[in-house]
Image (cartoon, rainbow, N blue to C red; front, side, top):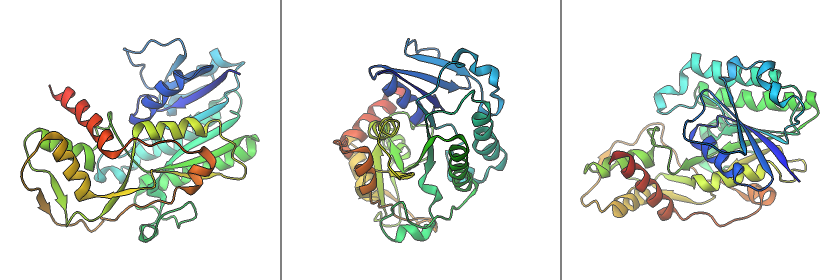
Length: 309
Protein backbone atom coordinates (compact mmCIF):
# COMPACT_ATOMS: atom_id res chain seq x y z
CA UNK A 1 0.00 0.00 0.00
CA UNK A 2 1.42 3.39 -0.99
CA UNK A 3 1.80 6.20 1.50
CA UNK A 4 2.72 9.88 1.42
CA UNK A 5 4.84 11.49 4.13
CA UNK A 6 5.16 15.24 4.59
CA UNK A 7 8.56 16.31 5.95
CA UNK A 8 9.41 19.82 7.14
CA UNK A 9 12.97 20.97 7.65
CA UNK A 10 13.92 18.77 4.71
CA UNK A 11 17.33 20.40 4.12
CA UNK A 12 18.51 20.20 7.72
CA UNK A 13 21.03 17.74 9.13
CA UNK A 14 18.43 15.17 10.14
CA UNK A 15 15.74 16.26 7.66
CA UNK A 16 17.82 15.76 4.52
CA UNK A 17 18.86 12.28 5.60
CA UNK A 18 15.25 11.45 6.48
CA UNK A 19 13.98 12.52 3.06
CA UNK A 20 16.61 10.33 1.36
CA UNK A 21 15.61 7.37 3.52
CA UNK A 22 11.87 7.75 2.94
CA UNK A 23 12.21 8.43 -0.79
CA UNK A 24 14.14 5.18 -1.13
CA UNK A 25 11.44 3.19 0.65
CA UNK A 26 9.13 1.22 -1.66
CA UNK A 27 5.64 2.66 -2.20
CA UNK A 28 6.51 5.88 -0.35
CA UNK A 29 6.25 9.41 -1.71
CA UNK A 30 7.69 12.40 0.12
CA UNK A 31 6.46 15.97 0.13
CA UNK A 32 9.31 18.12 1.43
CA UNK A 33 8.92 21.65 2.79
CA UNK A 34 12.07 23.76 2.39
CA UNK A 35 12.94 27.42 2.15
CA UNK A 36 14.72 26.68 -1.13
CA UNK A 37 14.87 23.47 -3.11
CA UNK A 38 18.29 21.78 -3.25
CA UNK A 39 19.68 22.03 -6.79
CA UNK A 40 21.30 18.58 -6.88
CA UNK A 41 18.33 16.32 -6.06
CA UNK A 42 16.06 14.98 -8.77
CA UNK A 43 13.88 12.16 -7.46
CA UNK A 44 10.41 11.38 -8.74
CA UNK A 45 9.41 10.24 -5.26
CA UNK A 46 10.03 13.72 -3.82
CA UNK A 47 7.84 16.77 -4.39
CA UNK A 48 8.93 20.13 -3.04
CA UNK A 49 7.17 23.06 -1.43
CA UNK A 50 9.42 26.11 -1.23
CA UNK A 51 8.45 28.32 1.69
CA UNK A 52 9.40 29.19 5.21
CA UNK A 53 6.96 27.84 7.77
CA UNK A 54 5.87 31.32 8.73
CA UNK A 55 4.85 32.11 5.13
CA UNK A 56 2.91 28.91 4.39
CA UNK A 57 -0.59 29.52 3.07
CA UNK A 58 -3.39 27.20 1.92
CA UNK A 59 -2.37 28.02 -1.66
CA UNK A 60 0.92 26.15 -1.16
CA UNK A 61 -1.07 22.93 -0.78
CA UNK A 62 -3.10 23.22 -4.00
CA UNK A 63 -1.20 20.35 -5.70
CA UNK A 64 -2.09 18.18 -2.69
CA UNK A 65 -5.72 19.18 -2.10
CA UNK A 66 -6.88 15.59 -2.57
CA UNK A 67 -4.00 14.10 -0.56
CA UNK A 68 -4.31 12.98 3.03
CA UNK A 69 -0.77 12.73 4.34
CA UNK A 70 -0.20 9.45 6.12
CA UNK A 71 2.32 11.18 8.38
CA UNK A 72 3.60 14.68 8.96
CA UNK A 73 7.16 14.53 10.24
CA UNK A 74 7.80 17.99 11.67
CA UNK A 75 11.55 18.57 11.90
CA UNK A 76 11.78 22.23 10.89
CA UNK A 77 12.98 24.51 13.65
CA UNK A 78 15.52 27.11 14.59
CA UNK A 79 18.12 24.89 16.24
CA UNK A 80 21.07 26.53 18.03
CA UNK A 81 24.41 25.68 16.43
CA UNK A 82 26.30 27.03 19.43
CA UNK A 83 25.24 27.29 23.07
CA UNK A 84 24.99 31.08 22.88
CA UNK A 85 22.11 30.79 20.38
CA UNK A 86 19.71 28.98 22.72
CA UNK A 87 18.10 32.29 23.75
CA UNK A 88 17.77 34.01 20.36
CA UNK A 89 14.16 34.96 20.93
CA UNK A 90 13.19 36.37 17.53
CA UNK A 91 14.40 33.37 15.51
CA UNK A 92 13.16 30.80 18.03
CA UNK A 93 9.67 32.25 18.38
CA UNK A 94 9.31 32.87 14.65
CA UNK A 95 10.31 29.38 13.50
CA UNK A 96 9.47 27.14 16.44
CA UNK A 97 6.22 28.67 17.65
CA UNK A 98 4.68 30.89 14.95
CA UNK A 99 6.03 28.69 12.16
CA UNK A 100 4.61 25.50 13.60
CA UNK A 101 1.20 27.04 14.21
CA UNK A 102 1.14 28.51 10.69
CA UNK A 103 2.06 25.12 9.21
CA UNK A 104 -0.75 23.31 11.02
CA UNK A 105 -3.32 26.02 10.25
CA UNK A 106 -2.45 26.02 6.54
CA UNK A 107 -2.97 22.29 5.95
CA UNK A 108 -6.03 21.44 3.83
CA UNK A 109 -6.80 18.46 6.10
CA UNK A 110 -5.14 16.85 9.12
CA UNK A 111 -2.51 14.18 8.53
CA UNK A 112 -3.29 10.69 9.78
CA UNK A 113 -0.34 11.00 12.16
CA UNK A 114 1.60 14.02 13.41
CA UNK A 115 5.16 13.24 14.50
CA UNK A 116 6.72 16.21 16.30
CA UNK A 117 10.49 16.19 16.66
CA UNK A 118 11.42 17.64 20.03
CA UNK A 119 14.71 17.53 21.92
CA UNK A 120 16.38 16.24 25.07
CA UNK A 121 16.75 19.93 26.00
CA UNK A 122 13.20 19.86 27.39
CA UNK A 123 14.47 17.85 30.38
CA UNK A 124 15.52 19.50 33.61
CA UNK A 125 19.22 19.33 34.41
CA UNK A 126 18.32 17.37 37.54
CA UNK A 127 16.86 14.62 35.32
CA UNK A 128 20.35 13.69 34.12
CA UNK A 129 21.44 12.62 37.58
CA UNK A 130 19.84 9.30 36.60
CA UNK A 131 19.18 7.46 33.33
CA UNK A 132 16.57 9.59 31.58
CA UNK A 133 13.28 8.08 30.50
CA UNK A 134 10.08 9.61 29.17
CA UNK A 135 8.79 10.23 32.70
CA UNK A 136 11.85 12.21 33.82
CA UNK A 137 11.16 15.78 34.95
CA UNK A 138 11.10 18.52 32.33
CA UNK A 139 12.49 22.00 32.92
CA UNK A 140 14.22 23.51 29.88
CA UNK A 141 17.24 25.77 30.21
CA UNK A 142 16.90 28.45 27.55
CA UNK A 143 14.25 29.56 25.08
CA UNK A 144 15.05 26.84 22.57
CA UNK A 145 14.10 24.07 24.99
CA UNK A 146 11.05 26.01 26.10
CA UNK A 147 9.91 26.45 22.50
CA UNK A 148 10.20 22.71 21.92
CA UNK A 149 8.23 21.93 25.07
CA UNK A 150 5.55 24.36 23.87
CA UNK A 151 5.63 22.60 20.50
CA UNK A 152 4.92 19.30 22.23
CA UNK A 153 1.82 20.85 23.76
CA UNK A 154 0.79 22.41 20.47
CA UNK A 155 1.10 19.04 18.71
CA UNK A 156 -1.03 17.38 21.38
CA UNK A 157 -3.66 20.12 21.23
CA UNK A 158 -3.82 20.02 17.42
CA UNK A 159 -4.11 16.24 17.33
CA UNK A 160 -6.85 16.26 19.95
CA UNK A 161 -8.95 18.80 18.06
CA UNK A 162 -8.23 17.29 14.62
CA UNK A 163 -8.85 13.72 15.72
CA UNK A 164 -5.47 12.48 14.49
CA UNK A 165 -2.67 10.44 16.05
CA UNK A 166 0.36 12.24 17.39
CA UNK A 167 3.79 11.28 18.67
CA UNK A 168 6.57 13.39 20.16
CA UNK A 169 10.16 12.27 19.59
CA UNK A 170 12.67 13.75 22.03
CA UNK A 171 15.82 13.49 19.98
CA UNK A 172 19.18 13.11 21.69
CA UNK A 173 22.76 13.68 20.53
CA UNK A 174 22.91 12.82 16.81
CA UNK A 175 26.24 12.74 14.99
CA UNK A 176 27.47 11.89 11.54
CA UNK A 177 28.05 13.43 8.11
CA UNK A 178 26.11 16.66 7.74
CA UNK A 179 26.55 18.12 11.23
CA UNK A 180 29.62 20.17 10.33
CA UNK A 181 27.72 23.45 10.85
CA UNK A 182 27.35 22.74 14.55
CA UNK A 183 29.87 23.61 17.27
CA UNK A 184 29.46 20.28 19.02
CA UNK A 185 31.88 17.76 20.50
CA UNK A 186 32.30 15.49 17.49
CA UNK A 187 32.60 17.98 14.58
CA UNK A 188 34.70 20.39 16.64
CA UNK A 189 37.13 17.64 17.59
CA UNK A 190 37.33 16.36 14.02
CA UNK A 191 38.05 19.84 12.68
CA UNK A 192 40.83 20.39 15.19
CA UNK A 193 42.66 17.10 14.70
CA UNK A 194 42.40 17.33 10.90
CA UNK A 195 44.04 20.75 11.19
CA UNK A 196 46.86 19.24 13.25
CA UNK A 197 45.67 20.87 16.47
CA UNK A 198 45.27 19.01 19.77
CA UNK A 199 41.71 17.99 20.65
CA UNK A 200 40.11 19.77 23.59
CA UNK A 201 38.65 18.09 26.65
CA UNK A 202 36.70 19.89 29.35
CA UNK A 203 37.57 18.73 32.84
CA UNK A 204 38.83 15.16 33.07
CA UNK A 205 36.71 13.93 30.18
CA UNK A 206 34.61 11.63 32.34
CA UNK A 207 31.28 13.24 31.41
CA UNK A 208 29.36 10.84 29.20
CA UNK A 209 27.48 11.28 25.93
CA UNK A 210 24.85 9.06 24.37
CA UNK A 211 25.71 9.44 20.67
CA UNK A 212 23.34 8.09 18.01
CA UNK A 213 24.54 7.90 14.41
CA UNK A 214 22.48 9.80 11.85
CA UNK A 215 21.42 6.64 9.98
CA UNK A 216 20.04 5.16 13.19
CA UNK A 217 18.20 8.38 14.04
CA UNK A 218 16.62 8.35 10.58
CA UNK A 219 15.64 4.71 10.99
CA UNK A 220 13.82 5.64 14.20
CA UNK A 221 12.05 8.55 12.50
CA UNK A 222 10.97 6.41 9.56
CA UNK A 223 9.61 3.73 11.89
CA UNK A 224 7.76 6.34 13.94
CA UNK A 225 5.59 7.10 10.90
CA UNK A 226 4.15 3.58 10.77
CA UNK A 227 4.66 1.94 14.18
CA UNK A 228 1.70 0.88 16.28
CA UNK A 229 1.63 3.43 19.11
CA UNK A 230 -1.03 2.19 21.48
CA UNK A 231 -1.19 4.81 24.22
CA UNK A 232 2.43 5.98 23.76
CA UNK A 233 2.74 9.67 22.93
CA UNK A 234 6.39 10.46 23.77
CA UNK A 235 9.57 8.52 22.96
CA UNK A 236 13.22 9.38 23.57
CA UNK A 237 15.37 8.78 20.49
CA UNK A 238 18.83 7.80 21.68
CA UNK A 239 21.27 4.90 21.52
CA UNK A 240 20.91 3.78 25.11
CA UNK A 241 24.69 3.46 25.45
CA UNK A 242 27.00 6.24 26.59
CA UNK A 243 30.71 6.87 26.13
CA UNK A 244 32.96 9.22 28.04
CA UNK A 245 34.05 12.38 26.26
CA UNK A 246 37.64 11.18 26.70
CA UNK A 247 36.81 7.95 24.85
CA UNK A 248 35.09 9.81 22.01
CA UNK A 249 37.98 12.26 21.61
CA UNK A 250 40.61 9.51 21.76
CA UNK A 251 38.73 7.48 19.15
CA UNK A 252 38.63 10.43 16.76
CA UNK A 253 42.33 11.13 17.30
CA UNK A 254 43.20 7.50 16.67
CA UNK A 255 41.13 7.32 13.48
CA UNK A 256 42.76 10.48 12.12
CA UNK A 257 46.23 9.39 13.21
CA UNK A 258 46.75 12.32 15.55
CA UNK A 259 49.49 11.97 18.15
CA UNK A 260 50.00 13.98 21.30
CA UNK A 261 48.07 14.97 24.40
CA UNK A 262 44.72 16.71 24.42
CA UNK A 263 44.35 20.31 25.51
CA UNK A 264 42.61 20.42 28.88
CA UNK A 265 39.99 23.08 29.59
CA UNK A 266 38.11 23.82 32.80
CA UNK A 267 34.91 21.81 33.14
CA UNK A 268 31.93 23.98 32.21
CA UNK A 269 29.45 24.82 34.94
CA UNK A 270 26.75 23.59 32.52
CA UNK A 271 28.42 20.21 31.95
CA UNK A 272 26.44 17.04 32.54
CA UNK A 273 26.32 13.44 31.36
CA UNK A 274 23.60 11.94 29.17
CA UNK A 275 22.47 8.40 29.83
CA UNK A 276 19.11 7.24 28.45
CA UNK A 277 16.74 4.40 29.13
CA UNK A 278 15.60 3.49 25.60
CA UNK A 279 13.41 0.52 26.49
CA UNK A 280 10.26 2.34 25.33
CA UNK A 281 11.86 3.20 21.97
CA UNK A 282 12.76 -0.45 21.45
CA UNK A 283 9.31 -1.65 22.48
CA UNK A 284 7.44 0.69 20.13
CA UNK A 285 9.83 1.05 17.19
CA UNK A 286 11.51 -2.34 17.36
CA UNK A 287 15.19 -3.27 17.51
CA UNK A 288 17.90 -2.97 14.88
CA UNK A 289 21.70 -3.08 14.85
CA UNK A 290 23.15 0.35 15.58
CA UNK A 291 26.18 1.68 13.70
CA UNK A 292 29.23 1.23 15.99
CA UNK A 293 30.69 4.47 17.36
CA UNK A 294 34.07 4.04 15.64
CA UNK A 295 32.42 3.33 12.27
CA UNK A 296 30.14 6.35 12.57
CA UNK A 297 33.04 8.59 13.51
CA UNK A 298 35.04 7.23 10.59
CA UNK A 299 32.23 8.20 8.19
CA UNK A 300 32.00 11.72 9.60
CA UNK A 301 35.77 12.18 9.49
CA UNK A 302 35.79 11.17 5.80
CA UNK A 303 33.02 13.66 5.04
CA UNK A 304 34.71 16.55 6.87
CA UNK A 305 38.08 15.72 5.27
CA UNK A 306 36.40 15.72 1.84
CA UNK A 307 34.89 19.14 2.46
CA UNK A 308 38.27 20.54 3.52
CA UNK A 309 40.14 19.17 0.49
